[in-house]
Structures are given as structure tokens and as C-alpha cells.
Amino acid sequence: MSIRSPRGLALVAGVAALAGLAPLAFSSEPAATSQTGPGVQLLDDARRAAQEQDFSGVLEVTWSDARGEHSSDVFVRSANGVLALGDRPQVIVEGTRRFVQGPDGWLAVWSQQAAPHVPPASDKWALSVSDGPTVAGRPTRQVDATDRHDDRVRERLYIDESTGLLLRREQLDTRGRTVRAVGFTSIGEPAGSFIGALPAEAPRAPARSTSREPHVLREVAAPFRAPGTAGDRFQLAGRYDEDHGTLHLFYSDGLFSVSVFEQEGDLDPAGLPAGAESRTVGGRDVRQYRTPGGVVMVWQSGDVVYTTVSDAPVDQVDDVVADLGPAGSRNAVDGVTDFVLGPFSW
Amino acid sequence: MNARPAPDDRLSAYLDGELDAAERADVDGYLAESPEWRAERDAVAYARDTLRSLPVHEAPPGFWEGVLSPELNRARLRRGSRVPRLLAAATAGVAVAAVVIASLVIPSPDRVTPRVPALSDSHAVRSSVSDEPVSQLAALSMITPFRR
Image (cartoon, rainbow over all chains, first blue to last red; front, side, top):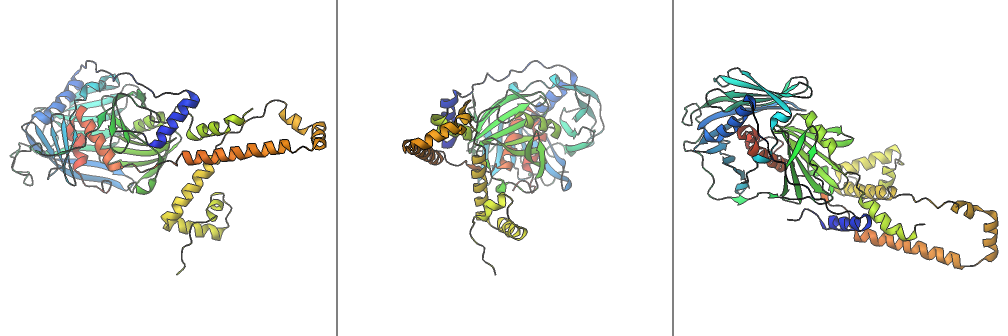
């Protein structure tokens, strides 16, 4: 799929002819390094346990936006290596495969191995481990993720002592207040009688699905940009070509992640969801949404519309936004002007 | 009932802040109600911004002194030749034609509305591959006003 419109091609060709610019090529993706320490080990174990342990439970997701605080419950069930979320369910996880329920059936939205490209959390975060509170009736180990630069705790994770499952995670703002949380309110065996709304049978990967997987990109061409690092120690961990001419950049600091979506054109805000907050970030006018999954920001810079989606604290996302946009490149008007006026210049 | 007029020159004056209060209120009303008026406003604003962002080329040293020199001006008047004026007119015509052709060759920018809920889902899915999947994917199975 092409990620440039005809106008984009014309502009790139024009600019390349006039200014000698060529599409940028990028080095290979960063490789992971070895991770050590009890905090890192607990997080690694939790990632595996969610798919290897058999369990069922109810998650409570809590978040706040301009209209106040919200919470919603989600049924979760895992059996035989297949994880299902939602009471229909709406999401299925099997190994690296991800399926999402669409309006016309299941969509296969991911199947690639991607974990090796994520940087180690310990580079940026100090992960301290202590005895935690009881969560959903289970004793936990508590992992505090503290920013090594400013000694602020930005995430607390509570991990089941006996199963290794992540039972709750809380995100904290710069003043230490919890701004978003995901945690089990009840959890047990798959056949547990307390979850009467769940279907009796174990979840299974869909037999039929429509592929909606993004394609991995080796390089990115103008007007898009893909900086190797962004914000506060976020590293580029993947480049993907999504539907509708959308470039997807995935950044990670080992604990949080930021997706940057780039689309060529002028932002038409008429079709955006309601409820955006207007902010100025790094000199840019940004529409911001606070959602159950994190923070979304939409803005325009040059000929590109950016959408940033992240589970990171908003101040960390602000730093990423401030780093993105044209890097001193000439715009379309400059190119056209030189073309038209060049023969008449002195 | 008053019929809403088609977008007109008031939009340009509106963007320049040249309308009086009553006219401005009228245009505000049209913009609030009419996608056609909003689209025309965006087009006018784009044209204005494009023209205003054209760079200014500096004249070479001594050019303006030569132009403003009384002796040179008198000499030009004495010659009374039509050739320089024809040359200037031809040059201006070529420049105008070039601008018009360029505006036709380079189409206006695509209008883009990001599919924000779908992009949020893409992020959650990608995050779930390298992070703990339950907490990353929980939001995908929720029905909220944001996910329409």
C-alpha cells in the first residue's frame, strides 16, 4: 500500500528536484538488551502468566476526563493458552495473534512477534519490589516504577504472589495521584461460580477472520518522519503501514508506549469524536482525549496530521509531541514559489 | 423564514475582521449551520494563507537607486520607447500564467479526519504484544462514548 497521495508524490518530486532532498532511510530497529532485577523479572513473568495461566475474573477500568471520573467492568477469561476479553467476547489473544470483533465478524489484527524490539524498562525506570496490599482477595507483590531522573513514582503494579498474574496497575501523575487504573475486582478458576455471565466453554481463536494486519516498513518517506527517539527516552520500536495511507510509529521506554500515526493532508476536525480538550503542546494546537486506554492527541504540523495514542502519563506524551513535526523542511508553498519565480529572480 | 444565502465575499471580509457586528453575527450563524459556508471559509483561508506565505525576494544592491535616479527616469521619458513596457507586460503575463498553471497542477491538500477510536485500538493491540496483554487490551472490549 502506498502511504503517499498523488499530491504527496508531486511535492516530494518537486522538492527533491529543487532542493536535492531524497527520501530518508533509517537504520535497523534497536535490539533488546538483557534485563535483570526482581522488578523486571516480575513484569516478564506477568506478561507470560496472562496467557499461560487458566483463570477468569472481572476487571475494573477507571479513568477520568473533562466530565469526571468513570469506571467500567470487563470480563476476562483465559484457558488453554487463549485469552478472551469482554462478555461476547470482543478480543481474543492466542500467542502473538490478536483478534478483534468487528461489525462483520472477527478481524485478525496482529500475528507478528514484536517483543524483542522493546527497550529494557530498567534503562529509564527503577523498579522497586515490596510486599503489596491484597487485591481481589489475593496477596500481592508491589512493583513501583520510579523515573531515574526525578525520583517520581509514575506506575504501581500489583502482582499475584502465587500465580504471577498482574492483578492491578495504577498510573500516577506528577503529584502522585492515581489518574488511571486497571485491576481485578474478582478472579478465580475458569469454572468459578462467581462469574455467572461468562460462557461455560473455554475461549478459542476464531476459525474464520478477515486480515487487517499492518505491514512492517523498513523505511519512511517524506513528508513523514520517524525519529529514532522521541520525548523522554522513548525509542522507536516499530514502523507499520496501516490502512488509509496511515503511517504507524511505535515508541517504547520499556514500561510505557506511544503510538504516532501520521497521515498526509489537512486536518478536518468535523468528524472527530466529541469531548476533546484544546491544549497547546510544544507550540502546537492539540485536541486531547482522555480514554480508558490512555491519552489521545490530534494535531497538524506542516502537511501531516498526527494522532498520538499512549498509555503513558500525559506529561510524557507532551514531550513526544513536542519532538515531532517537520525538521526544517521546506513546505509546498516554498517549492511552488521557487518554481514560479525562479526564472525571474535577479 | 429567511433563506440562507450562498457563501459570498463576506467570508473574505469576515476573515480580515472587516465586517460590522451585525454582518459578523450573520456570518457566524451561517458558519454554525452550513457545511457549505464552512468549506468555503476553509478554502478562502487556505488561499489567503498561501498567498501571504509567499517569500519576498530582495532586489540586488543598487537596483532601487537606479530606478529612483532622476536622470535615469528623465532618460526613460525621453526615449519613450514601447519596448520596455511590452517586455514588462509580457514578463508579468508569463508570471501570472505560471502561477495559474502551478495552482492547477498542485491540487489542494487532502482533508483528513483520523479514525481516532480505530487508531486507539491499533495502539492497544501493538502494546499488548510487548506488554502485559490483559491491562493493555481491556479498553478494547468496552463500549464508551469515545468508541462510536
